[in-house]
Image 1 (spheres, rainbow, N blue to C red):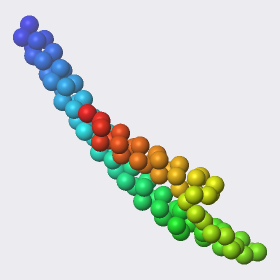
Image 2 (image 1 turned 180 degrees about the horizontal axis):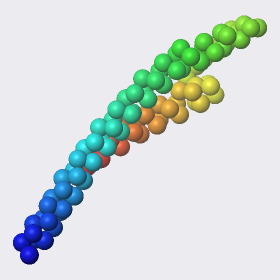
Image 3 (image 1 turned 90 degrees about the horizontal axis):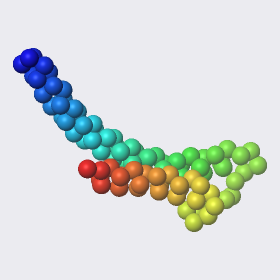
Length: 93
């Protein structure tokens, strides 16, 4: 009989500790994902988008602004996702 109550106690302790560990891990993962995506967004928009245009054999004389349609697709969308992930990671309790 004492074995059963001891078993139940260990199960509830593990579940409580496990939930805290999962929440802390998810918080760190969301923050890391947001930071890495933010860095990747700047690298993508400032290096790879102009590089793709420069690989055009007819030449490319286009300027890429963050306020253009290309900026909306290639900069602001991943930037918004990265900020949302960081805010979610910070607010996660």
